[in-house]
Length: 273
Image 1 (cartoon, rainbow, N blue to C red):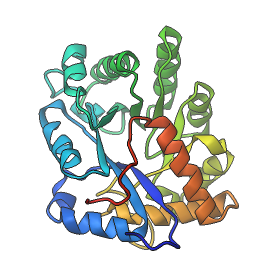
Image 2 (image 1 turned 120 degrees about the horizontal axis):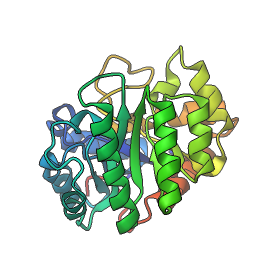
Image 3 (image 1 turned 90 degrees about the vertical axis):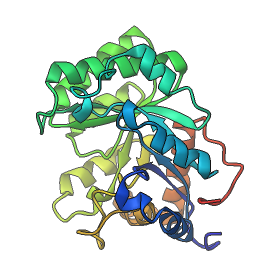
């Protein structure tokens, strides 16, 4: 069990099936638990590998999963825009979200049209099955905001801009349509002043924390593989940015995470059980 004095946190976005974590999964989960991270959502990035995060979620009571197609994979996955295939893959008792989906123009692994088609298909499934969508956005702020606003006009859906590192305008427009904003270890980076300003202004009921592990380890662990235990460093920085105590910020982000991912069942109290 975590130390009773530690804030209790949820890592809302990790990739536990990636080898940097899966090769020592028991250790990763034990360290997370010791740090006060009581629940983890492990994220799907391809339909062709969706069984891996599902299996981890099945094996651990306090790990949940998502199913989706990352924008980098939108040109590779044969069912990247296949609504029936996405819906079928998400039909799992531990699946609490669709994604990660979205737009990434930093790399050209898939064309903007392929990314948009896959993103819109995943939004359609999220809307239909009433699951939130986990959104990846990089160097695509205007197109991202336009798609989110256009799709919201077709019918309501919920979601989160994960590992947020975009501009303030996208954050504001996303929150305006009811989205959440999730902050990762980037918040602790020396040159992330603009991101910290965005984190300070976001509505209190719309902010989450995550690791995006094994990537983007926060200070003081930069240069190492990230893992869910390090959620605590982002939480402490977010608390400082917003003038809150870490325990209060943990309670706020925990409540927000459970409101968004409302199919999580917290009847079990420790990860790795």
